[in-house]
Length: 309
Ligand SMILES: NC(=O)c1ccc[n+]([C@@H]2O[C@H](COP(=O)([O-])OP(=O)(O)OC[C@H]3O[C@@H](n4cnc5c(N)ncnc54)[C@H](O)[C@@H]3O)[C@@H](O)[C@H]2O)c1
Image (cartoon, rainbow, N blue to C red; front, top):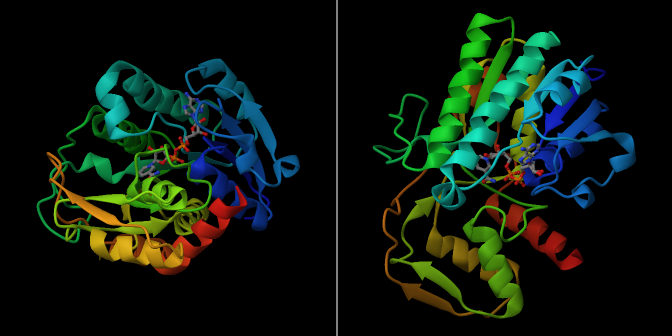
């Protein structure tokens, strides 16, 4: 299995580069396809060991010609973020929906029979109950959530109609090494940046709202496990399976970053959900997913990486 050829779209990005790192450790052959719009070649330590193609997923012909002889596609390239998508839903949908259709078409034309798609918990919209399993109602409330859902449905449809086993991994809050503070509007890189500058961190509401943070190394492992298990297909929720309050996160970061920064409380943000936790039983039963990196350990690794930057 390890000698298989993996084609990773978005492999120079935050999550993609961690997936590539793991694939190289597993001695896989890796081709990265990325337009470097938000990715960085510096994210890939062993760049000499991968085949890098600078290309856009909107370039259908290039995708088809460069993904010949591949066995598995890990599709991470996307226009990311809820806020960005509000300003330009057309651009968001073209990359996330049409781009994904192009990737699927390349799989079909080149007879690649496995694809793992990076979906998002943004597809759920308003949360009705906890923990969130795969049967939770789906009603995205941003153009980004809509485009990630449409792309997920295209992947699953292709899976049913052509000989391609497609998996959609719906990530919750991913954090860790290679995450730039502006990449997704996520709280951990934003606070890390403030703490390192010696500025206070801002907490909305009373800080007792909860979130499920999953380390990017566990997300990379889930991609590998789902990609290399012949029997796995369909949608899977992917978080750590546990949650912390925002107050707990703040205290942990202040401790790990060895800082005495102030916490400032401000009004609740409109539309902000109160609690969020993934149910990961399906991923755990079907492909042995386990959350292996605790939040404190993951924050410490992230801190060490930031200090080296
Ligand atoms: N970061 C999170 O918390 C999170 C949560 C849920 C889902 N996701 C999903 O995970 C995937 C990876 O996200 P990330 O956080 O690593 O983002 P990122 O921006 O760091 O990575 C995206 C990568 O795709 C590349 N890319 C963008 N548009 C492209 C295009 N048109 N053609 C080719 N390459 C293109 C970028 O250059 C970048 O390297 C995305 O599909 C995203 O929707 C991320």
